[in-house]
Image (cartoon, rainbow, N blue to C red; front, side, top):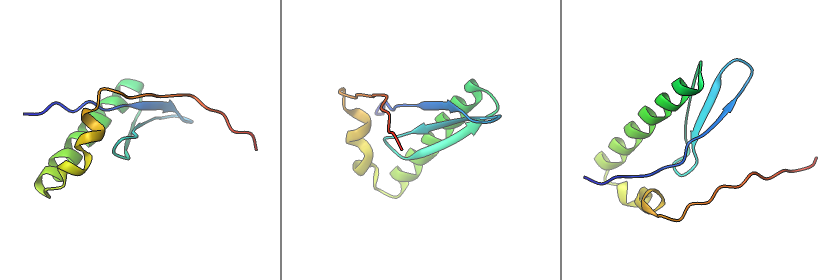
Length: 78
């Protein structure tokens, strides 16, 4: 069994919370922060199970097992 670490980015929209795993491009949502995180966790698990079944898990493994991950908040002006 391998342990995969991933990033969860969560933000509030009008009435819901959106959650996203940038390493996989998987997203979910929920009525609360906790629900959005739970739903993302489930979506990532399903994604990984499907990737394993399709024999493409090696393609995403490095991004989920690296110990060096960085996040930054950037701004753009339009």
